[in-house]
Length: 324
Image (cartoon, rainbow, N blue to C red):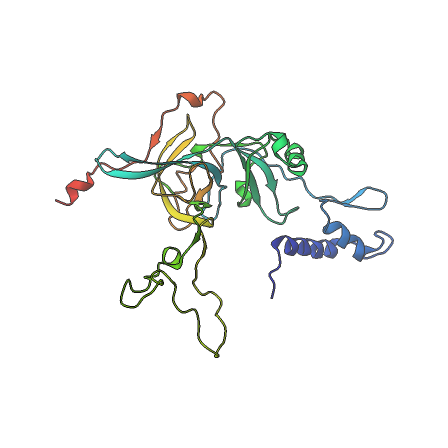
């Protein structure tokens, strides 16, 4: 059975609820069945009669950028970053930490999606800058309709209703706090057409004793007349890499609000210069009392260039002394 989109289910529920509260007389609303189906499944949010007056107007949702209280069921938006590369740092105890550096390049909210219109609560985030000549007319029209500058990369993040932000809200690296865990999604490096030993970790054929020109081959791929075919999913040579992968539970070591840089422990998918998408970890959930909700809203008198980097709290006990 094919899956039904959530937006379609939401519109059907709205249609049934409106039918239950509307008058049944044909004089007040002509062609009731077809009228509601056409209007509820269109892009307009309100209902209008033949004269152009509103019959049932959708309530305008007011979204404000203000600090709120995060609950256990709240879900914040993510941000888009650029992978700058890897390095290594030593913490105050002398422990070496492999570090990936991520640059949060001018993230803003480019579109707000609500249940009333799109059937889901989500925020579309834009990152970077781009010229109009490098974008299609449809994409340029989308940015102009929202009243936001042109962005190089767009990504939609599902959120809860209490985590909605107005269009144009700026998101920086202080959306996360040092010491929390995040999930990082990106496109892995493309490695081209590779054999089964590199792609799937096969051990290969014998190096001598009768193995002729088949040292790195994949071996047999099936049987004879029964079943007379190669089963689907058979591991063979083919294109490797360039797939979307998510690294979970990545620890945030340090953030630099002045340069919008983030230092995270370990590797993240993708090559240098690729976009990665960062959101709160699903498994190792952060402490909601320490997270800015729905995001960090800087005071008007704050100068970002004067802010100092923030480092995760490593405690007061030397981990190397515990072993003794």
